[in-house]
Length: 228
Image (cartoon, rainbow, N blue to C red; front, side, top):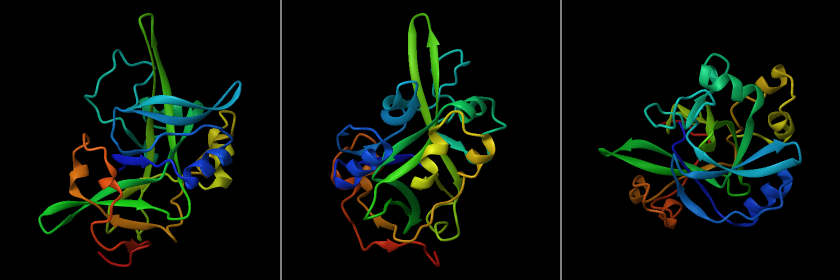
């Protein structure tokens, strides 16, 4: 699961965007939550571009825009079987630039949030997107793809977002990539070098948008973890 993430306007994020081929500066956002507008890198007829999209997928065929069903994540196992995910997976794949993401685990009777990130590089989160268009409305929306977490992450959570290495970016973004090649992108990232930093529980409230989402509230855990 990936229900919160952040973007920090720093050299790591700027380099990620340049490497992705988009010349844009993104504002810092510490506590991004589902249904908010998020920047998504996608391939267009004019080349790569960053589109603002609602982080909660609305399929093109949906009758209306709603939140009755959880659609901010798309399980990798369901990408080709789900009516909602099948078309976007084949034709509309994108990358969500991120500095890190938040996961929670139960500790001492409460849920402790952890900011998971790599101190030396920003993250390219794999996503899918779709266009919902009606005579009176137009909406681009997206979901972050999630995978079964590798063993070294499971003490934190059973699932984690798809983090794409640079070698997979072109295949993932190109709508004409063979599906066999795209499926090869659906692999857990190497956790080496990543850390999980406990942060203030104030970020559990999506309305809290300050830097408590990244401010350490305890010593970091080096990934991969070997025990819970």
